[in-house]
Image (cartoon, rainbow, N blue to C red):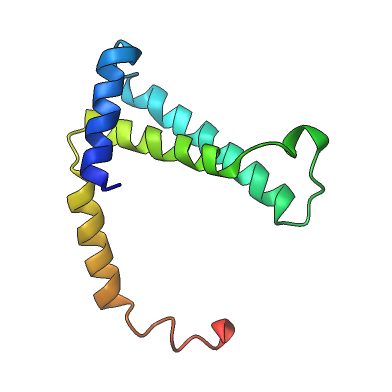
Amino acid sequence: MDIQNAQLDVDNWIKNHGVRYFNELTNMAQLTEEVGEVARIIARRYGEQSEKESDKNKDLGEELADVVFVVLCLANQTGINLQEAFDKKLNLKSERDKDRHKNNDKLK
């Protein structure tokens, strides 16, 4: 999956099934909710909290996909080419941080 095609897939889904995009504030609230669901699974499954019986069948991949879906919605409705933005960010991080983590004694 490349990001640009994913944005198109989401836009087509919205047009064919979703009626219209929720407004940006609603989608921001939705994103926060979805990130919270990811955090709950990770905190209980990989962190120190006990996992509740009701959470044991939750699919982390599905919840992460929900986050990606809403991010793609926000990019579409605000006119962001997320592929370009991601590529630019990765290049920036590659230049700026190329040695930073290699020299971090906490990661050895």
